[in-house]
Length: 81
Image (cartoon, rainbow, N blue to C red; front, side, top):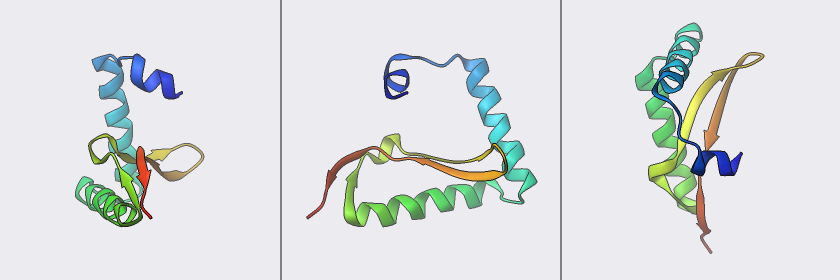
């Protein structure tokens, strides 16, 4: 999965489909995009206090699998001592 992220380029149609799915899920649970973005910023801010992270490559999104789920992919550079 890690290799896929770095070596596999997504097609624009797949990206659009994923964005639409995220939009539909956030709409179903009553969470607008501004709220989702605020959640992402807060999570990154809190984690940054303790761990040096790659803020440019963080992904925080709400997905619908068996129910609404908050998913985060936050690349870690170094743990702060």
